[in-house]
Length: 508
Image (tube, rainbow, N blue to C red; front, top):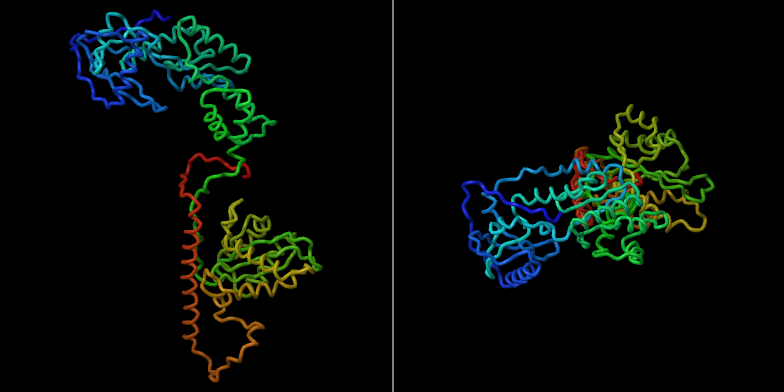
């Protein structure tokens, strides 16, 4: 098939085009001289006296080397266009359905494998600072060279085209359903190329690379190990150029590894604080700590933690971890609703006791909004998570060998609510009640009784409580801003749009 020639047909009113050479830097000129000498040695160019003369320039390849190009725009302007059809990419992809093994072959020297008709060689002459040359083989950049090359490839593979081989210019893809079939198809394609004088470029061919890496990564005995372990195992038996990059890309793109492995990038999304409640006990959060082993003598093995999101005041209720939704509702009414009224919203995790039909119906009747934290993301209910951590720390410090932690829970609750809260700038007790309840330590101080026992005016009391609420609100805003800024240093701001494709974590 090497007897195929590329011809150039010009329009009747063409004009001979010639142009002065482009300017090159000294390193580029050195590279130009080297490539011209190599082309002369291979017989791809020869000295010319043609009136035609296109300028040359360089294009940088992916590997940073320079590709010699010729600016044939002047010649293309007067060339009659060849209408030979090129393959449709969507139809080529349709042919691949149902196949498991694929191999890409890139031809060596590409277009230079086809000669230009002797009468047309003067038309593709080019100029450089090192002389005037014309090509004897088909160059890149001519308007009709893709059509000529595609026609040559289709003629070479006409008996097997689209049976197990696809061709798009100098890219050849062999595809098969089984490995044995694939090896036979590959041998036939290479024999066909060799008979017509075409040869593959080994550095760009993908001979069984995917299969080799899959054997040492995807199989059950391989265990979907990481890049370094997979590369070490592949390298024991196989060698090919840029093997390290190929294995790295393969492991990084493995669907199973992406679904199961822990992410090593910064988590998506910036911290978005929940809206601040407008007043006391309007929004509460709830969670269980447990099961705690062993149970206490009173059969308590869990703690129901209820926190007012505005004042940060907490209620710690000992209970059984196996209690049902009705019992949870009874505790909430006894410890919260009785003293503070019905909250407007309740935040909790997806515990079955909070998602039960009874619990949901209860919220519908009383007009309370129930919000759940997302699965595997307890940070949604950050208030309760922080309180739980503090509660566990206090219990570990005051509970010793007897393990009867439920007897100490009232003291722990009082200590927690007396403690200063950075979020509000005051203790939960003071924020909720407007004063600090007396504790045992108060009896060690001299009496602070005042002689004036008159009842304060109502407006003074209202002003006092309003001041507390305003101060608490300002501190919560500042605290959320501070916490968000600190948390967002280790997160990335990535916006997802409705309809975007996302990878679902295997745990969901």
